[in-house]
Image (cartoon, helix red, strand yellow):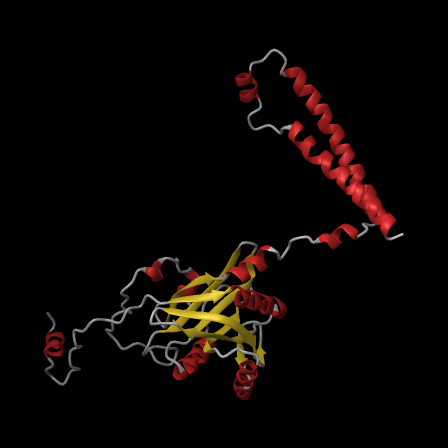
Length: 310
């Protein structure tokens, strides 16, 4: 064993004293983001494309393992295509005071910003911003969302926090060990190569994000694209309605011919032989059962709407 290493372990030779063998604090933290917050972040990020945008997250630190984000709001900022910075420090306090008057008494648990099209990670400016937030609260989190890569059913989002003692201007001491974890919850999400290149697990680490919605929010999301009774009173343009009706009639005529040919081919065959023969083929009868009521319904609605609005 190296003599210098041995002296450091024994506290000799002017080296640093050995670390106390004490239990490590649990690292099984989880960030719970509400549906309202997620929709606001995505809408704000979409509106700012191709520039980056940022805002503050309101919520509370429930316990040592849970951080909830109830709501978010945007703030004055100076953004480019690759960076974003806040420009008004007084706005945050004024906004929080106004939100308290409307019943929002939650505290700031972190900040969010967008990376339009280039993934979730922290740049040098983002690290400096996160360090300023952590000076106010050591458990503050930085959420990064990509509104361009986020598609239907999949949101590209991640939450980060700085590793204590590291940063772009504070390199980790030589010989230091990587950050220790006491839970496997942080390994449920595989990190991207891009985030690794930009300092993930060297300067900052990732936190698990969970979605939380109550019964009212779930009902609201289910009714988001639900049609109401007033849609039946809308009159479709006659040219569009005529073109759609002609296309459906041509399609039904073609499917009817296919159905007649299939009935002729199935004569004399058993049910098992018919089932094997039609594997992977389009069922014309099922298409007719779906298209005929749809065509009749659209024509009836168009006629009734025309009479009502006449």
